[in-house]
Length: 527
Image (cartoon, rainbow, N blue to C red; front, side, top):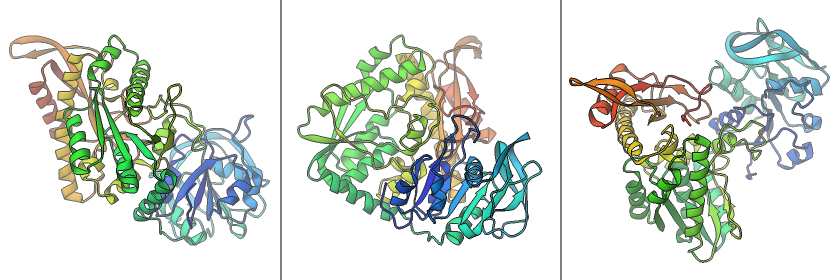
């Protein structure tokens, strides 16, 4: 855990998106980190936290396998705030009662305040909040007062100001809660007396010092993909140790059109970072021949990537460390316990490293406690150009998981050309919005956008000829961290221009469709 003058610890009870709490706290310029919910109180105290937040979770507090916590946390003399499951376990641990409501409460709910509340502060008497529960506190512990209700929930929030214990059944961390940011601010600044002092410049100085101290005079390698995460990691490590870092770029032939050339140009010419460019296109084409299962594609691509990478790494003498661009969402979607989360695995992830027999490097993961938007801010502070910092997220397996079914040279060519048109048009659309709003991710801008090639063909008509060719599906979403996403409400003329260009310019395509599914229930990628 990093050394900070002000530290908010989030105890994670397994909510799939509970890590959003830590990010919201950081949005308010206060540093936060996540620990498992069952971390002993004395271990928590050793970190000298300024505040503790209890996350939500999917379980019932009365279930046999319900996530538990050390009740001594409430005796540390540190302000504690619980959300949803966090409120329920606070109530149970302190002598209150949690009941199963007859009617569940999911989505928007009308909150009615009752009396004075330090947590709710000067927020409106009536406000909209976001609920997701069946169980709810039915009797508050001794010393607590009920500070709000909804039509379904008798204890929508409660507090014992004398002990600095506060809790809500609703979720202030989600954007759907009208005054969520105000409530978090009341807790952090009004109740805990913290200051909004956590800045990216301080983060860089701290990380550079940590890397230098750990690496010393040893050599480091990094698998550079050209994506935001590995690029920012490369810039940060290079700032710390200079030419002790060597980047290895494995070109598997599954990158977007023009991307390999861009990666080599930026990192060798602009930044002067030692770079090994490995051309493995033919090797991957043979590996993927006949493979249709998405998880099998991921495993083969990920496994072969590390084979190629370690072959190159062993050619470099005296390398001790491997730098990785791992970030929080990587850990979450891999279902790992590194953050203390208990969320189930969504899909396998390329950042889990299979060291071959007899080969091992010590890991450096300087971004593993940062969300995607924080990584971008870090990149800007490091002086990386916008073309790198605001490059879209791109999966490790590349275009292979945007081609449904077998990956063939013909399909790759079609998808690369179609995807280039989607990116060109939506890059221009986002640029226009940026000029109008001055915001990188304004209300109607796209955060990620790409083309998908399904494993079907459809009938069409071009000129006087009947065609039987492939469709392209366009995917564009609005998000800040990939943990949740909504489909982008693009203007019809933008969608129309994308469709017209793809059909006219890409051989083998006669139809374009637009994906209008949010995450959840879908994922952003198709495989």
